[in-house]
Image (cartoon, rainbow, N blue to C red; front, side, top):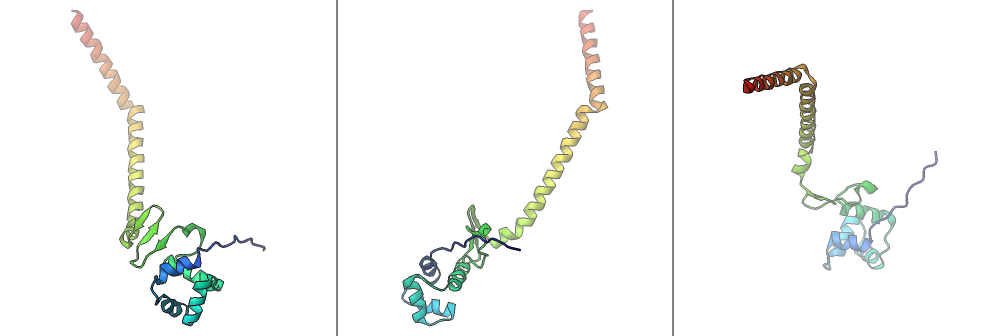
Length: 149
């Protein structure tokens, strides 16, 4: 089975490096501890903007809050406070926990709407409405007869 994989597009390493480790002189120490390499190696990766691909991928995943690098998650990231940043806004862990409740509520509302719509259709086409229309027509004719006398 021959699978064609899309070429992986990673954000600029130096931008990720600054975002994750800061702009302070100690950023290389933080990076070295993170990658498990020497300060000198971390500094070289930053200055040349040419780290090993695995280090670049690892930093991209860390920057995004350990979300997958899959294209569906491209514009999402989790910050250090645990908030999910999406293209449409920020979600807290509580928002995400309530997602199932929102979906359940939407399903219940849709079900109730369909039931009400069916009842209305039944009323419009049923014998009760026909009897009411017939009775209203009969009363109108009676009133006309009374008014003519």
